[in-house]
Length: 114
Image (cartoon, one colour):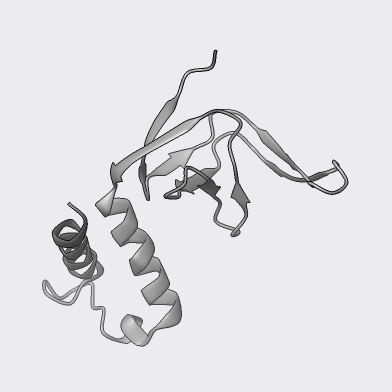
């Protein structure tokens, strides 16, 4: 019997071995992720890779709690890509730097989720 893996929603993990993704229709290999590839754990235990591919792991995954720091980091990434927040961020300013924004997002998440 395989052991259950325990993770938090939003947790950023790293593959400890290479995985090969196969097509459900053809059974052919469609994508290979090498050992060390980072992914995010979703709320249903699936692995979400940076290219958007979602993989359901072969082992049972128990998801409990939230990794608010990792979720805040991901939200910040989206904001930097999809909004003009880069025009506001100033790494030389103690109040308007990226770290401050990320910490504010993390605090809001802790208020909401914990």
